[in-house]
Length: 220
Picture 1 (cartoon, rainbow, N blue to C red):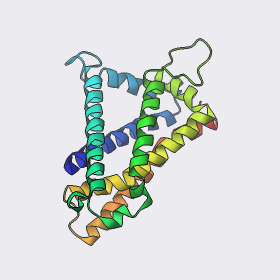
Picture 2 (picture 1 turned 180 degrees about the horizontal axis):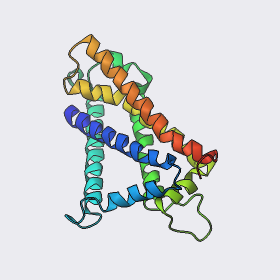
Picture 3 (picture 1 turned 60 degrees about the vertical axis):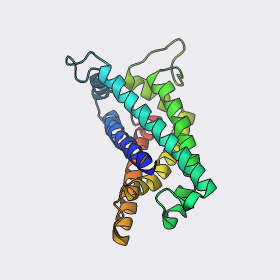
Picture 4 (picture 1 turned 90 degrees about the horizontal axis):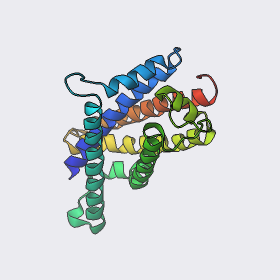
């Protein structure tokens, strides 16, 4: 279960890094042309080898499976830890568990899940439409981002969401590598902790720069 949690967690971190890279196209001075093209390309990736949207849906299913397995593993490990069966602990490192990020893994995970659902309803399904003009139900990917992050409370909720995400990653990334056997010395443990901190900080800055610039009027 620890290995499943570690592998699925690293897959999700890899997705976040790719997603962040895609979001940097919002910063280009082309009124969203590159960002819209990028979004359109994802929907037609591997076409005509496979029909449009097939790859995107396959990738979405893969991510959902990773999330489900990650949550299942976390629940199992939390239950085992509470029963103290053989003293089993995820990553089994007291020094890591003593950190704030480690102590709040469950709560940051809950916030992450709720934020993900809201994010999908907002920017993918367009069920939630804050910032949309009255009567408007569909916008281009670029315009829906501008509309959403033009609302202050959406940006505030996004900041809270990203704080939870990055706290989760700060502890979880290092723990995942340790679980998979990368913890071969005290030096390697420090290196993994530093790497986790860099990844968490990179994601925090990378994901929050576009919303802040949109809200402040620099973009759009």
